[in-house]
Image (cartoon, rainbow, N blue to C red; front, side, top):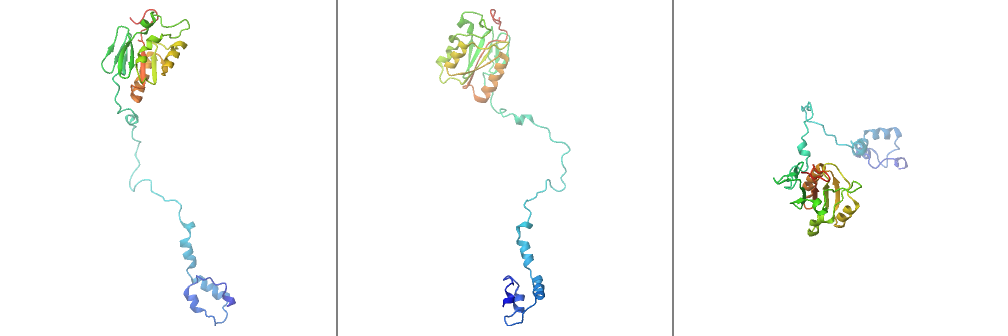
Length: 228
């Protein structure tokens, strides 16, 4: 029995039948031959995870399918996330020398500015509130009195952003004008009138006319003369 202690318990039944506790000692050569006849290595080989592929491969294209000769053209219309968003009626279609043309068909002329608030259109004449056709101060800053923005005192809730178009070229706001608008709880963006109108159209379409307002001076504005 001492000579059989190294035999694995998973040996085949044929090995068990050929050996008997009363039989003579078996040589190592015979045991090695019996081991080679068992299927233990094949079973271990089938169960070993090291023999399995760690990836599941999929063919890149079907059999017989040829790659395209050239990539399909890009449809830029599909990239426009605002394509199905309706354009506000107060969006500015045309910036004229002495006025504006709106998407609703309303035309502002006679050198008047325009104020666009919450889907409503107002003539804007900040020079009348100031009492002078000169809107720039000695430092070249656009300086407007609080009365030029009096409509916001009657409005609640107020828009989050006010875009100010300063005419044919951009001018900074004076600290007093900027402070007054900031006290109304409204953020300010200052641009020339052409870019200010384009920015209003974009943001009003994206965020809504209740969040974005615009106050635009005509493109033909000249200090001391106006846009007549």
